[in-house]
Length: 349
Ligand code: ADP
Ligand code: MG
Image 1 (cartoon, rainbow, N blue to C red):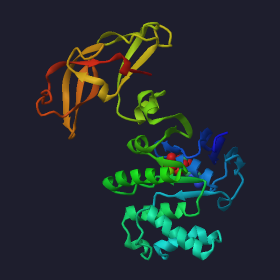
Image 2: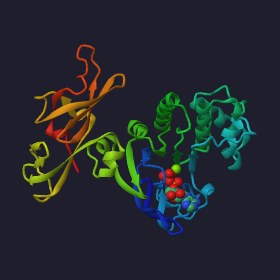
Image 3: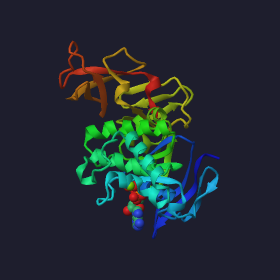
Image 4: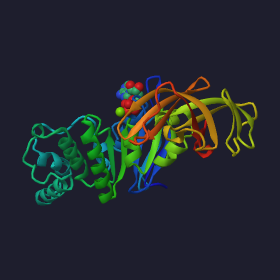
C-alpha cells in the first residue's frame, strides 16, 4: 500500500457530488500536484485528507494507519492555505512555534525547532517581526515553516502561491520544491496553474468535475494526454478533425487531404478522429516532418524568445511556436506557406 492512500473517496454537498470515486496512492517523499479548474474538488479532497471534511465514503491511510475518522489534530498533517492565514497578533517565531506549543513540546526544544525552521525558509532573522511587516512571499514562507515545524508525515499546500506576483510565484515554487526534497516530505500541492504543476511535480493528478481524469508524470501528462479535457487544460493545442480510413497504418482523411501516422489507431475504420498538435510539434515550411499541409499565416505574436504564429489550413486554425532568431524573421501576415509535422508528435484523441 502507498504511504498516503486515498481510496474510493466520495463527497457530496447536498445533491451535488463534488468528489467522485477518487483514488490515489502517493509514495513516501513524493510531490504530487492536483491540477484542475476552479470548483473541480481539489480543496475538498485536501480538506478530507487534513480532517476538516468527512468523506461520505472511502478511506484515507497514512503509513498503513487508517486516519479517515480522526480529528485534524490527531493526524500528522501540515497545511498551507492560499490566503495568508498567519495569526496577525503573534510574531513570526510565535506563529512558527504555534503547533509545537499546542502539542506540548518543551520550550527549549520548541525554540530550537523554530530557529531551524526559520533558517530552512531563509528568514533566520525575522522571528521578532509581525506578519504585517512581511511581504506576501515572506508570509507564505512563514506559513510553510509553521506547517512543517511539528514534523508532519504529510504536507498539504492549497494554492499557496496564487495570491503572489508572477516573479515571486516562480521563485517561491522552486524554493518550496527544494525544501520538500531536502526534508523528503510527502506532499500534495494544489494549483490551477499548469506551468506550476508541470515544473515542480513528481506526478500530476488532473482533476475535472470531482474526478481524477489522468494521473502521471508531467511529461506523460503533457505528451500523452488521454482525454480531450486533459489535452486542452494542460498546454496549448490545435486540433485537426478527420475520419479514420485504415486503423492498421493510422491513415486518416482530413479536409486538407490524407495523412498516415504509420502506427495503429485502435478505433474502427470510419470513426471520427481528432489529431491534436502542440505548438512545438508544427514547423513552418515543408520537408521537416512526415506530414506536410498547405497553410496561410493569419497571426504573428512576438512573445520574446518564442514567436507564436497562427496558420489556417483547410478551414482549421493551427497554433505553432518558433524560437526568435534575428536572421530568420517570422513570415509576413497573409503569406502562403506549408507546415510540417512529425507523425510521432501527433496526439490522437
Ligand atoms: P476547487 O478547490 O477545485 O476550486 P472545491 O473543492 O473548493 O473546488 O469545491 C468543489 C465544489 O464544491 C464547488 O462547486 C464548491 O462550490 C462546492 N463546495 C465546496 N465546499 C462546500 C461546502 N462546504 N458546502 C457546499 N458546497 C461546497
Ligand atoms: Mg480550492
